[in-house]
Length: 344
Ligand code: MG
Image (cartoon, rainbow, N blue to C red; front, side, top):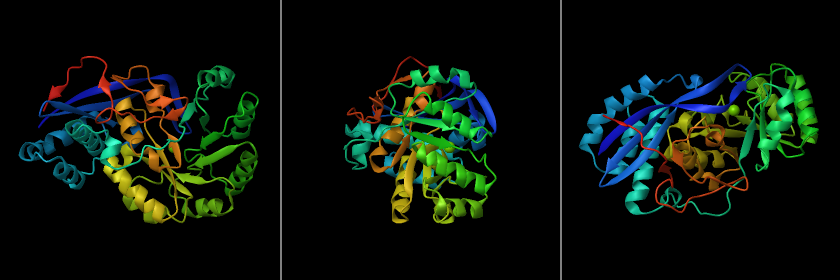
């Protein structure tokens, strides 16, 4: 097996603002694994808060190369990578996605069929609307016309004004993401009760991730499900948060890929947690990998590839706002342009 990689910078259509920072680009590493005439593609997306860089991903890839040279069985490689000593989850996700894409192509099966996930109707994805200038909201909402659910980042102190302004323009259901921006539980409960009447369906990460007491208090009283995002990274966190939140936001970059996400989903269902599947700013490579398991979830927030201007892959991930499975082998993506991958 031959692995190559490519550092790539995703350009956002609009500046991305959340309660603690803003940015216009996101670095990623694209990965290609070649074997028996087929290529599998993967991706590590590296938003600042994951504490990984393009350099740390490349170091990880170099350290794992000897293993790739000595194994040719994809399933064996998938579990070795997962257990590999460094805890570099976006790099593990990239390799996991690429190996699953390759496995699908070698077996002429779409990835979701490898995992025996039925192809019944997938959920609608939410589409994130940036709020850096409320005067631009009418344009942003128009731009999101074909999506059925809108997601907004709140928690900056003008929550009611934002929702009221949106409600003056559209009655589409909303997901709100507080990104740890609240600190008063009584305010939080008050506003969630009000938002419940405004057709807000879920609220992500109301308080700082370490604030378990207030979060559990809020979860027990809130009419709106409370979803853990920053407080939930991977499998090991499930026991800590299962009584504190109504649900979890799983992202492949946080948990290390498709196989780990499936293990989390199984356990989360045992715990009766709601399951949201989200993404970072990503190309349609990593988003398609998430869509392959979207048949198992309650809420989808898989718009990362829709928010960038330079997706190097062609794919078809949405139809009338609903996520869509590809019937092509692997992830169902193709490289749109010739890119100069660097061989390891
Ligand atoms: Mg979030």
